[in-house]
Image 1 (tube, helix red, strand yellow):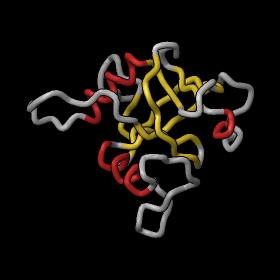
Image 2: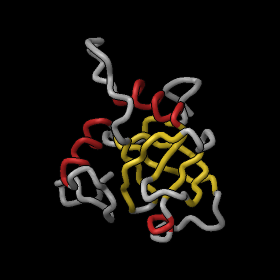
Image 3: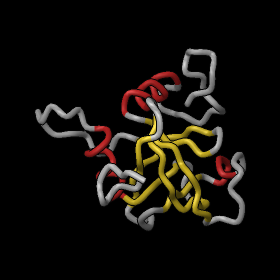
Image 4: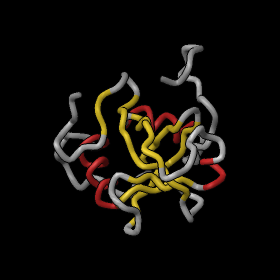
Length: 138
């Protein structure tokens, strides 16, 4: 298995997503979250413009997908590493049983995340968004 770096929890999966394995657990917030350190790392490594000009925003949401649900993910100081805390209402719509459970999670690549956020005014929580080709989002 090839990883993007030794610190990365994601690997290349498709033209629109990275694949990761995170412990999915119910969260206490209405927004999904991962460790702030990991969120900043993913943002810098996978979402950065790469032009080296100016400061990158480290607070923009990532977009992840568990089963057929896409949702924005922020960084939070109280979330353990390698854990995705998901709002209970979102978790109910997945096949995750007996959380915390090590689960395959898709992370939308920067351009795909931007597209998903733009389609939903920044609030992605929809079932199996279409990629415009008539097929599934992946």
